Length: 178
Image 1 (cartoon, one colour):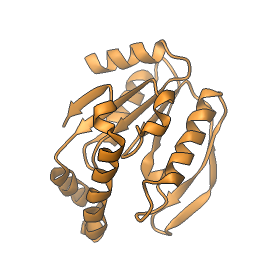
Image 2 (cartoon, helix red, strand yellow; image 1 turned 60 degrees about the vertical axis):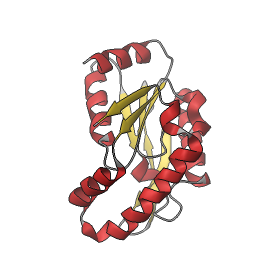
Image 3 (cartoon, helix red, strand yellow; image 1 turned 90 degrees about the vertical axis):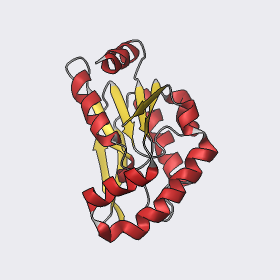
Image 4 (cartoon, helix red, strand yellow; image 1 turned 120 degrees about the horizontal axis):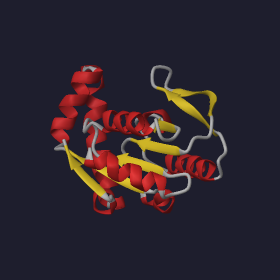
């Protein structure tokens, strides 16, 4: 509960706060985002956006397109504008029609590369969920099935390169282990 209290304090002292929850695949970022959103929702309106909705597929998931989308979404949130974006349809391997989410008081970005340095100045805080990548790999395979095993093996390398280049863990304000 101390974490929720700290996040509640941060959110109440920042205009249009944005939280980013980052860390390796399978660390529990989605669960933490839901927990924070539920805990703070009696006090403020919240929106959670998952990076899985924003990645343009496996090959170029973490790149300029994701950075541009995050920059757009954070600027819209700060300006109290609705958040408009196209979510990636993993089965069709393409983006769906654009959707619009209403402006809320708190935006939570969740997933690998959500706390990237390009949007750091827009974040009220950032959280890192620490987990051995191999354990994360096993959790993802248990959750999503072995059919994505080869993609996930490549993803481990992709996320590790991103984290090293972006110094994500070192820059996050909160470091939690799962």
